[in-house]
Structure formats: structure tokens, C-alpha cells
Amino acid sequence: MSTEKPEHDPQGMDLAKRIARAARGAAPRPAPKKRGPAQRPDEPALLGDLLKEVIEEEGWTREVSVHQLLARWPALVGPVNAEHSQPVGYADTVLTVRAESTTWATSLRTIAPQLVATLNEQLGQGTVSRVLVVGPEAPSWKKGRRSVPGRGPRDTYG
Image (cartoon, rainbow, N blue to C red; front, side, top):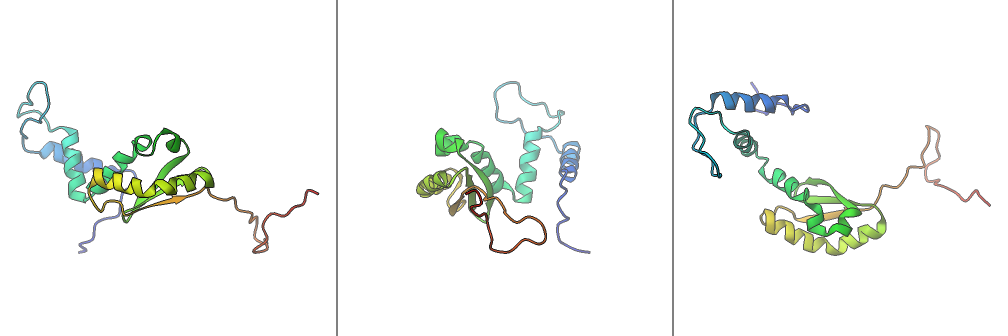
């Protein structure tokens, strides 16, 4: 019997089933700290509380926090920079941002240290060690199986 975790279900059905099982078998919880009428002991647990438990059990807290913060990308980098860039990945404490042009990539690289400081201030020190800013993807000139390596576009118009 293996102690490894099962592979991730891309449709999320395993996670949904775990949440449903937890909701059915969950012990009554104290009333959540919110305004309004108190939750009765015979009422089911709140879905948000169950999701928080699953996120903590799986160790996804840091990644979820990073993605929630990056949802506010315009507030972090300003509306003009956000219009020309977007975060595309987060792995091993490195945030990857794609800019729409090399000019915008250069501009974002200049504010990358401040962005790291802001992210660590809001998420906890060590969450983001570096911001990697990449420019737009260059088009591939390789067409077909018999293309010649190292021969990109040529001036054939004059």
C-alpha cells in the first residue's frame, strides 16, 4: 500500500466529494464571527469554513493567498502597468509576470524589488523571493519538418 497522495483530479470531483462528506459528517460548529443571526447547532457548516479546512489540510494556504492577492494586480502595480502586464505563474517563491512588449517588461523590471517587498509585506516574509518579468513570446519561424535551423525571417521584399 502506497503512502503517496493520489494524483490530482483535474475536474475537482475528489475535492467536491471530500467537502460534501465533511459537510454531512461535520460536528456542529460554533457560530461564525459575523453580523446577523447566530447559526443554530443543527444547521450545516458553512461552505467557506469547509473550504478553509481543506486548503489548510492540503497545504495550499500560501498559494491561495498569493492568487487572491494577484487578483488585485492593478492595485499592486498601478492601473497603467496592469493594463500591459499580467501575472502568469507562481512556483517555488518566484512570481512570473508577462508583459505585452519589451518596453513594458523593462519598466516592470525596474519596480520588481518594490513588488517583492509589497507581496512579502502582505503575505508574509519569504513568500515571494523574486519577480521574473518576461516579454512577449516571439513567433516561431519554424514551419514543417524540413526547416533549416538558425534561418529566421529574411528581407525578401526589395
